Length: 80
Image 1 (cartoon, rainbow, N blue to C red):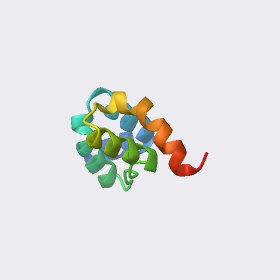
Image 2 (image 1 turned 180 degrees about the horizontal axis):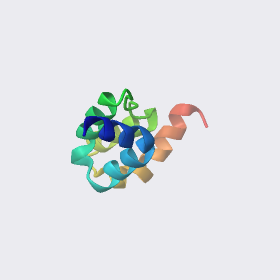
Image 3 (image 1 turned 90 degrees about the horizontal axis):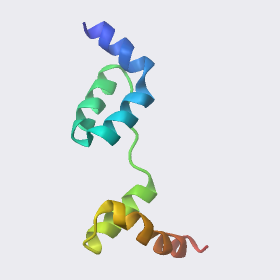
Image 4 (image 1 turned 90 degrees about the vertical axis):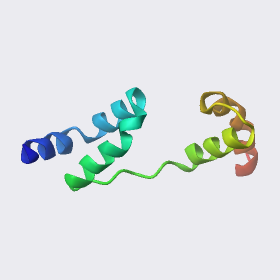
């Protein structure tokens, strides 16, 4: 069972992470553990994702609402 699970995870790594994060974010840590068992590691969040999460917390907004609102601050901080 373990070898078949490791093979499945190894063959479907990107699809599993994307589906898990979209459908059931609560299970993301479990997927990270499964990937680690298969010899893979989960990437840390991008700087943009971290920025949006901090922006949402600072302005008491939902993450989805902060995505658009944070764009101006992000561009200003990058000098664009």
